[in-house]
Image 1 (cartoon, rainbow, N blue to C red):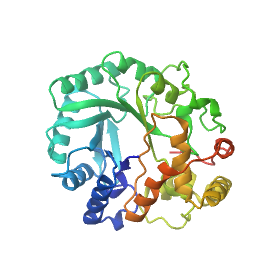
Image 2: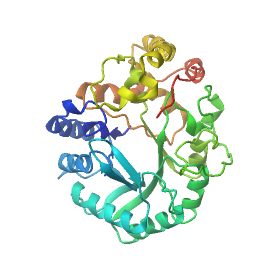
Image 3: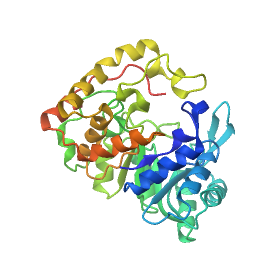
Image 4: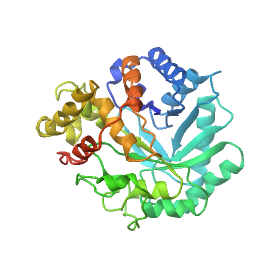
Length: 336
């Protein structure tokens, strides 16, 4: 299990941001054995990397720091960003990340999004050169198609692919909004992918089984938003978001979608009750049960939730429970 740090700086309930408490949570995660700490230059326009750097200063051993580049902030308050995969931009962003993280080498650097105006090969060759220069150890991709992953992997090994995957977002399994993953996905399979979409293909709905591709090629799969941005925990209410919270205008969090999606959280809660577990633990255990190469990165600013999430690694769901969760209905509302 990893720790996603984005919400400590950006997107969610920013009025309650508390840097010192977040630093303490990151350190608690490390002390509890969490080895993957996930951040990005985008999150808070560098703030989150600085936060992670402060938290891990002098405690660098045995922790993989993952960050990302290829997105540029135009307006932080309005959260306007654009993709920029040009080699010169990526080289600059790597240097900026090194400075903010206060490290001599970044363990894992993702191309945050593919820039449709720049061939992925150009971006990937530039990052490969950064690895050769010793500034980065491993490279990853975020929200890509199988075709894009193949193209990059042929140039330089892809160590990890990060994409949204949860009980209500299953695009990387090749089913899109359709539910019912099928337990056959626990076994490695080989499936082809479709061509890239015109926007750089951050949506894998018809792209085939990206998770299976990562298994077949020795690539780690890192699900972000594994708890459905908090919805799948069953603890949120549609009127509980402050102005500026990303979820306040997200299609899956409108009052109407909130009510329709209760069928999903009710079933998760029933499974959780059978184990005296939390709904979050069930969501994470389901992910861990899909494949051995999965490393979820639930984000939290709470020490209590951190401890609860980590206990999901000890939760063994039955085959019947896995099938029940596989068969949950499709969510109401697009994910963006």
